[in-house]
Length: 180
Image 1 (tube, rainbow, N blue to C red):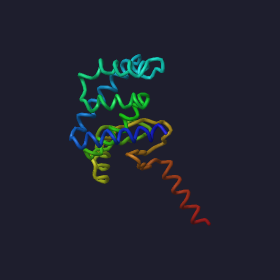
Image 2 (cartoon, rainbow, N blue to C red):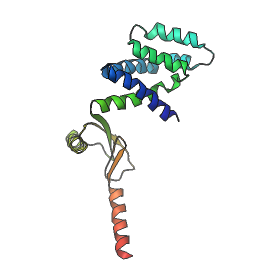
Image 3 (tube, rainbow, N blue to C red):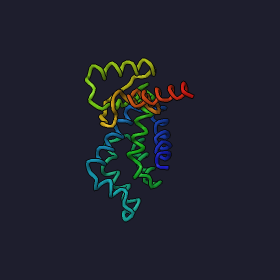
Image 4 (cartoon, helix red, strand yellow):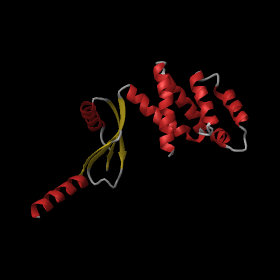
């Protein structure tokens, strides 16, 4: 449910920012807010607290952010407070980044391997993924010791399984078809 809410709010903000041709600026401003909330966990807790009134929360928000972010982002934060969605800010920000990257024809991908990939192999994989997807892929490598060998790529909602386990499963399926 929270993911759906985050997507809706992110999409609404992105549409406004895109129409104003400011979606990159808004991304930076949201990053600024996210970083402040992360660094000052007490501020985050204060904005979530049911003890603090809505008016007080808006005043706190105004004091801290009003002069440092655009009116659009500031009003968006106020809407989150009005709708009691301030606790969903981080998820909304993450969803917004995905939309902003798509607007720039960018996509983030993760290559999961048993051992760290060297930069040359990572770059080759990134180029191949960019060519096959038609998007500018930003690839990072994550280590998972449960991956026996090969690579598992997660790119948006796509999963490309090039692991040894997947290949063995394919071979097993093929052998079972021959035997039957």
